[in-house]
Amino acid sequence: MLTRNSDSQATPRVGGKAVIALFVLSLFSFVAESQLTQHVQTKLGFRQPYFLFYLVHSFFAIIFPLHLLYLLATTDYTTVSLVKGLGFAIANHLDPGSSSKNSNFPYYKFIRLVLAMTVAITFPALLWFAAISLASMSDVTAIWNTNAFFAYIISVKLFKLHWQPRRLVAVSLATLGVVFVVYGGSKSTPGRGVISNTVKPTFKPSAPLLGCLLTLIASFEYGLYQVLYKIYAALPSDPEVASERRYEQIPEEEESNINSQTGLTSKIPEDVVYPPPFGFHPGLLASMLGFFTLVLLWIPIPILHYTGIEVFRLPQNGATVLAIIGIAVSATAVFMSTQVLLGVWGPVITSVGNLLSIVLMVISDIVFGAGPEVLTVWSLTGSGIIVLAFAVLASDMFKGRSS
Image (cartoon, rainbow, N blue to C red; front, side, top):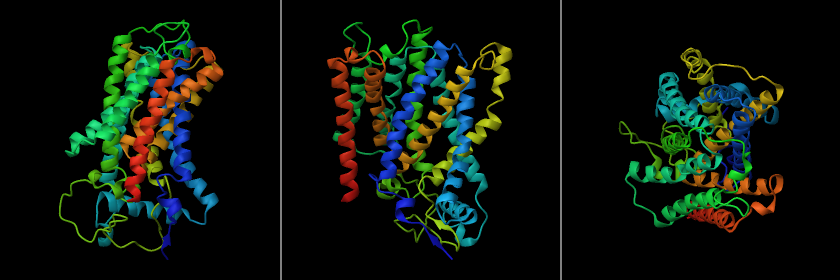
């Protein structure tokens, strides 16, 4: 018998509790990941950017097993029905109409998709890990968060869309707001922003120009990744894909009888959970990405060691080990949350929403750092601009979905 998944578990509202919870989780986790990464590479002296990247991204592999165990413990679904439903959804997405012909699962297309995702996310992540040990946290933070601007430009250029003045202004203002916060200065140290003050003054960037250049390239690549994820990886039943036709792939051949709500091109088989539970499909992709990272991307480690580019060494103390675990956990939360939000909100709003992490870093520095004296007119103005820009984009999104 067919098991129909409830709307709340499959494709929640853009402003549903689960979506908002993931969004908040991603913000706090990004702040934790950034601070812990710089702490490990500067104060603790463990400058192993590639090894850190390898450990952190391999950790993504635990996402899907944990989510499956959670569903089995909290629902009446069986492993078979969940996996069959997910397989049907992926097959229908990657090879529309194949399920009606009782063909096999499109393993080649699925593996190709995951490998492409692994490559696409590896380069910006590697550049970020490298840049954070070369340049100041303020520079890396400001430049990295221009990915919101790149995501919008790429969306417009790639799909030949008309410029939307409200979106363009909102994204530009959000990027400008980050610059205000990061470089706004402080009363005690001219020229240093709030985020700069969170870094210990003993840390001197070894190659700031190279670090900034690497971050700029990483930011562009991550903006591109977010847009391409929406096109090729997100399921047709995801709210953003279902409601906004611009993210559709150009079909290779003419297709018919496509359900406009779920994107189905074939009859749903019996005894499956469809649509897949909320976050189940992004979780599988994230875990597969982590698996391929684990089994393939260890190869450069001995090469980097013998060439002297990055001499391999293990953490020397428990504090470093715990900090690395913290980076892995927080990075996993960020990545999983972002993958889900890309399917619900889309790349532009998700990337601008992530800029709110800058506001959180300001607040955390006031509460746990140097105190209210680091707060300036510039940081207040920049934080306000970021919040306003996100509010404008979110408002447009909600109005578009309700109309």
